[in-house]
Image (cartoon, rainbow, N blue to C red; front, top):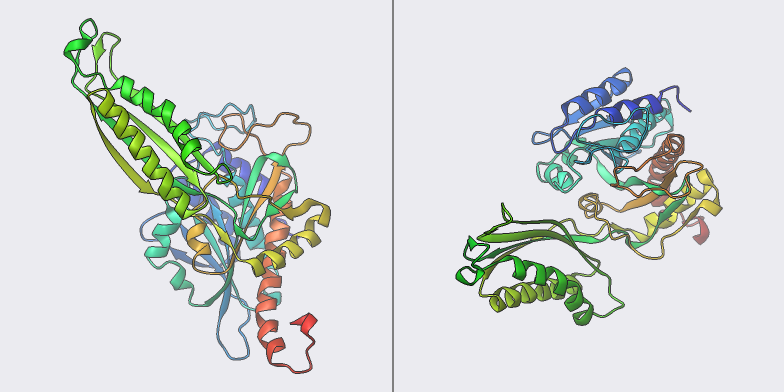
Length: 406
């Protein structure tokens, strides 16, 4: 489909990852790979995100239509231990496959640019920074980057590779396909003192330890077992030396839910447990609850259409509905809130790996061969989705069109 070497770009990006909202080296590599196509480039003012636009045909009425394909470009603060020949030598790693997302979208850009005559509208290729916990999608939406495309949005689409699922397997679902993330930061405050005389101090550590032990139990007792709730403390800190009682102890945790009402109940339970444990130990607690990414909501009609395209590309045996939403969060939810969208997981487990590490692990590995799959799917989806956008209004007004083709 294209002579562009997506594998070489992926490995180049993987060896030199960048974290956050500013990704100068990554953007330089991506722009260099896109340069021969002479695309229209729209830059974010606030971040390294940018949109490359492939202008296609217009409708007979002259109104422009566009579809959006998104790839996230940022890495994680993980020291790589994958053993890959092109592994990162820094304290960052593409442990979530964003290097594959980016390389695949560049490959799709080459394929689509070669087929401009087949485009019944525009294709906006969004290369995004700051997906990992920095809400880069929200920032680019708020600054109006999407508006610069100057077209009516038809639909959006994003793929996410998984290192522990068979290569080529596609899973999505109508409705919520990812979880909603909430950050919980609690600081227990006591009175510092000497480790030999704890009765003269107020030790915040027992309150913190008690809260971390009791929160999961309280959630399991306060929320219906059929409702999904995941509470995971990822950062815990207290003290400086073994014989010093610290003045404070803190934790940062993530709360994952799928229903706003369940989230509210879970937050109330966490606050109650922390406050109760602090009081029981004579300490105080400050709790900060921050709403993170909402769930990615997949439009039902888009799910049917994109699944059919995926089945044509991969074979029907590899395409299926996810039985439940994934607990992971994704800021593609910001895009899906603005236009009908499809978000799908693409298996990228290397052949012969019996016990694969999951995304975000230091040992995670991904199969380069999945790049061709992703390029083919993104290209086919963009062409067919724009064609459908032109044909559907015509079918809806044509009395000779059967219901089956509408």
